[in-house]
Image (cartoon, rainbow, N blue to C red):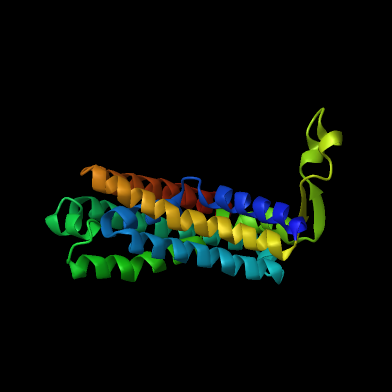
Amino acid sequence: MFEVVPSLVAGAAFGLALAAPPGPMNAVIAEESVLRGWTAGAKAGLGAGLADFVFFLLALGGVVGAVQQYPTAQGALFGVGGLLMCYFAYGAATGVRESFAPSSTDAVDGGTDAASRDRGESTGFRRAFVLALTNPYQILFWLTAGVGLLDPGRLDVLAVLPYVGDALAGLFVVETGSPALIVGLFGGVTLWLVSFPAALVQAGRRVDSFAPAVAAVSALVLGGFGVSFLFEAWRTLG
């Protein structure tokens, strides 16, 4: 029983580290959360998480590794991902204007503007899912660290510490490739995808200007990543 605890904890920590850093996925989740509420933000997070699960299955079957062998395919992914991010950046910028309207404020506060809520609920999941599937960095993660996580083995985490490694050896051993590690990984991702929108919604209720600010930052983040992805596609395919 206790042998699986280190793997669960390590997997959860790895999942949080994977999901939490600022980037295009969190920009979409943030935009949906502050403009349309927790449900829309959580659904956007579910879309990003589902894409990770798809990559996990592909890595498990060895399919994802084939992308690494074809630079043209990587360049095409950068190009498609960049175009999508620029398109969604425009949508986020439009959301900045919408957030100043009374209907948007009602949607954040749980009001009755069904049209605003339906729009967020119907697109947030798909936007995050498609962006994640075409995000080369997400694919590269599963080509590198993801493959390492799936490769059966043992990692004595504390044994590598200087000076005290010998004394702590065997206290925190992670079983790579184990179900516990994978469950912990997706558990950590899920924890972030649920708590991040909730924190944003609560902050938005306390600060009236929070929603347009987050939408503006989301537009900048998506646009910045989109331009950088297009440049990388041009460099790879050029």
